[in-house]
Length: 124
Image (cartoon, rainbow, N blue to C red; front, side):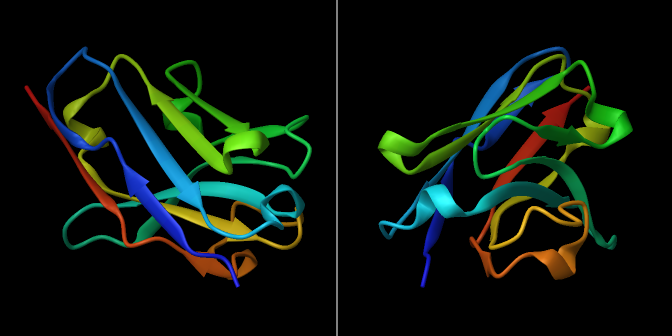
């Protein structure tokens, strides 16, 4: 069982930065691939970024490449999402998730555990 708690969301102006954190419980954190998804009002939950269990591979949706960076610190059982050059279209609730396999990390169905989300609002 893994419990995930996101933090770091908030209100920021376009062009600004935020760093999201996701703290995981349990000693098996290092076995999981970790992902970030986001859901805007009235829209589906979409993939943003993922990192495999070793941290050696990262994956991003095209719209955030070059702006967002995912990283993990296994000593702290935490995964981060550094978000730079934020745009109003980045506004959403951001969710952290854990997957026991690194296959298909862009898909919702790959993930076994989810956090409750943190709101990110980017004003124009």
